Length: 540
Image (cartoon, rainbow, N blue to C red):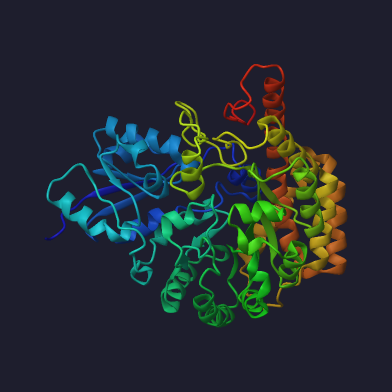
């Protein structure tokens, strides 16, 4: 069937600003509007018929106009749980203008019932259902459910995303995806439910082709590999990385990379050296807890029975700084968990940590277990209440009856946040990182516009510290001076960590203030101890 013309408005929903990941101050100082672009939507755009016209609006960087809606024949949207509130608003907005709305992405996959009002729902990996959807649309259908069978998509056939739709100037980093899925079985994680335990990787030429398009479009700078676990398929990534190294070297290293990986990355010296040679400079690792019983009980076995400090420091010596995730609220925690977690963070010298409350996400092993035990709170839909914008693990969570007294869990959470995000504690950790980092010596061909942009960022950073956070200025200058003398190759990474802290530090203060109110409410009997912790609503 020959495709008819159709105007498709792709709209990426807003993330709640009350989030660790919004990085609002970091983006402001860097002169950007958002951390990363909507990779999923621009991949969907590449699957649509060539006869269809496409516009992309990222609501985190700009807004939908009446002109956009008047132009559109359909609206396509969708995202993650922290975008749910705005996704629902977008459905209502599109329908109010007489436009059918199509919703896809991870949240509709995990919680399809939330999106019943959408005209079309596409849970699962869209590559498996997009052809059926297009055929139905061309045949005149204006509503329907197109559900993908799990884990059947061959990602080597996934198209090159429509990077040309992006406004590069809006983003701190651009993004690509090499693989989907993770081989581990962490009880609280929804990745294995969404994408499976057998990581599926793209072909080398396929991913290099995506990077080549970014290069040809003139982009230079930070590219994030958004894989659930880049090293989930070690064989595939080890075959790919030498080709990425050669591609980077042939073009003067136009990109610096970051990614997410499991802690067993530290066990593989060959893999660490390949990442370093390819110019990876940062990695996010889910550490979750230093407590062995907590790790084993939540099936985070890959983190158990190892020296976490040594693992993190080996990654530093391979040239990558580590940001880490920790979780408070596991059943096996004891009253000393705050001390243990802070000690781990300090010993490993982790400057930036996302410490969050345990949340039973939809369709996970954890939510199913808690439901069997009668502990899941059925009145709280994973931290979201009617009319409220969502947050993330830092501002929402504990949507179940905790094994310990809820007050004690919240008090420990508060204690961890207070102690790790004090300026003096942050400066001590970042100085350690500045000494340990050993990035590769790359002969980078840096365009003048990148140099000027970096200089402007440093200028805005110094102004920000001088005017808005003067108490941090002396520590920043001293740390930068020490790094310039002892390890100048790590300067850019150290500045990046400062930029992250300028969001994370104040954000943690807001979460702490809200925790104080929650604890006071429990102490005074204003709410039941087992009521859900709705943290960060008024304060953030």
